[in-house]
Amino acid sequence: SLVELDAAVTATLTMPDHLEAMVPEVLAGDPTAVRVLLAEGLKAEETGKGTSSAEMSTTGVWGERDPAEGTAERGRLSTEVFVNAAVAFIERWNELRPPGS
Image 1 (cartoon, rainbow, N blue to C red):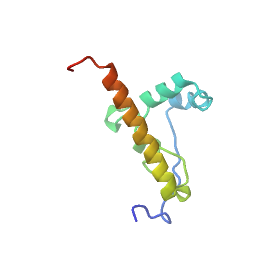
Image 2: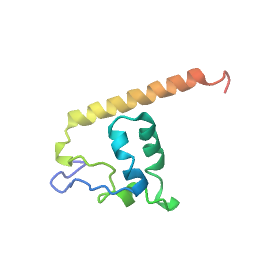
Image 3: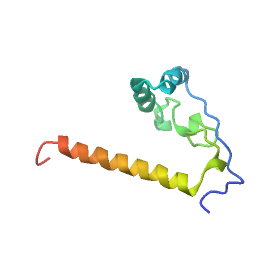
Image 4: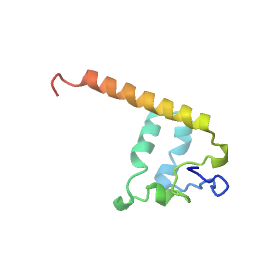
């Protein structure tokens, strides 16, 4: 098995104050707040910004879901949604690029 669920624990996240302050707006659905949080968060530890997953999470995983809630079906659906979004992005990118680039 890829994950030993009996040993997996839910991560506790702690974010720098400026990111934590954005969370209510992100949860309220503010698209700009979502983009800023994602742009500012999850930078490499070497940047010194304190926003890598290793620095913000007790497990190194940037998420607070209980691993015991995971199922193969949930993973399949999540992967499918991610891949479909990536394909749509690349297709749109190719439409917007100048010919021959």
